[in-house]
Every structure is written in structure tokens, then in C-alpha cells.
Amino acid sequence: MDIATLSSQAREAMDKALEHVQSAFKRFRAHQVAPDMVKDLLVDNYGVDAPLYQVSDISKSDDMTLTVKPWDKALLKVIGKVLQENNHYGFSIVHQGDCIRLYRQPPTQESRQMLVQKLAEKKEEGRVAFRAIRKKWKQRIKEAENKDEEKKMEDALQKITNAYLDQLEKLYKAREQAIMKI
Image 1 (cartoon, one colour):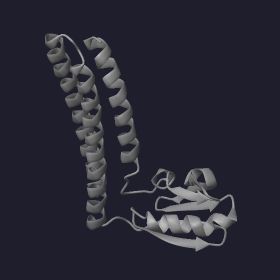
Image 2: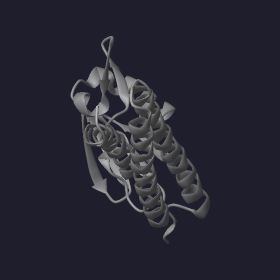
Image 3: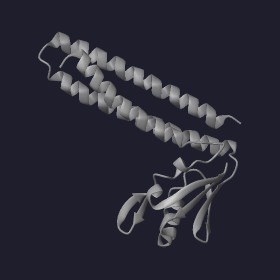
């Protein structure tokens, strides 16, 4: 294994981790709701866990309201229970006949701070993922026979890791400012 191979493969793995964190960050919104906020919640669909978007239609009624309309009306109670258990965004959940409406009050300073705390947790998960990738590649580098090459590869790996950690921090700061903006 040479430095170029290491760099490309490590970057590829870290790109995937960064994309995952970016998609998680997109769910954190203060000024409006989006179907992304609930679409990945797992619902028991007759013994098989399925994401909410696979068993229902999730739409945005207005800036602060989501409507979840299950394709199978028997899942209404199950979906309602899942939404109650995973209510990280402070929704008021109302059952209305064949659908569930999720209302969200305009954010207060306290609710914004709670969102930022959850955002920080996701950022930390990203940092842990980058460290795990670095650890995995360090173990592969240790198997190299040339010690000079080993040191160069470790330095290159650390530079790559630092670059991705910096990107993560920039994404976090940008999303934090968007949440805290009044």
C-alpha cells in the first residue's frame, strides 16, 4: 500500500461519514419544519421495522406543520406512538381521522439551545466516526514493512483526518448560527 492508495481510500471512507453527518445536520431546523425531521423513524409494520417514509405520506402543510398520512390506516396508532417516543423537536402531535398532524410552536431561546445541544451530539458522533476510520487505517499502516513509509503514511492520515474534522466543525458552526438566528 502506498500513500496515494491510503489517501484515496481513507478520504472515501471519511466522505461517507461526512455525508451521513450532513444529512443528520439538515434535520435540525429552528424556523420551519421539513419531512426529513421524521422520515427515518422506524415503525413496526406488521413485524418488520420500516422507515416512516415507506409506510406513509409525509408532507409539509405550512412552515410549522407536518402531516403524516399512513397508507394503511391500521398503522395510525403505531405511528403515533413512534412519533411520541421520538419527539426530539417539540411537536404537538394531533390525531385527525386518517392522518396525524405535527404542529411546532415558533422556537424560543430555550428550544433553540436544546436543538444546538442535540446538534453537538451529532457532531460528536461524526468526530467518533472519523477517529474510528483513522484507527482502522492506522492498524493497516502498522502492517507495512518499511518504517519510514509507515511514518509518512501516518502523517498523511492525520492530515486527512484533521481536514475532515475542520470541515465538520465548519458545518456545525454554520448550522448552529442558523438555529440561533432570530
